[in-house]
Length: 137
Image (tube, rainbow, N blue to C red; front, side):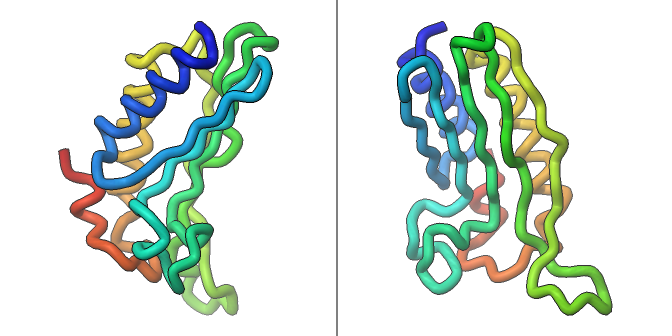
């Protein structure tokens, strides 16, 4: 699969699972960086800072390793544990690698991510949008 096809497949699969959010994909040489977010733009993030999106989902598609998509981050900001001095806690989803990724495999993984978000949505902190709107389809 070529980078351009991966970008199209990843973006369309993300839009199908999270239609009220955004994603980013950029090809560099023989690889693509992909990032998915719950917010549509900075106006939906705490303090209007785009990096305050509660979802941190990132991965790399690399043609050199033979045709593999590897997640590098799949976590969310949540309320910290009781008694903790931290401002946030993190809910983490186990990273996966997808060999020979296509739209169907990416769609399946993004559906797993949506289920993970649904399971942890009541613990999410500082949301500036309706989480249920992001998870409906």
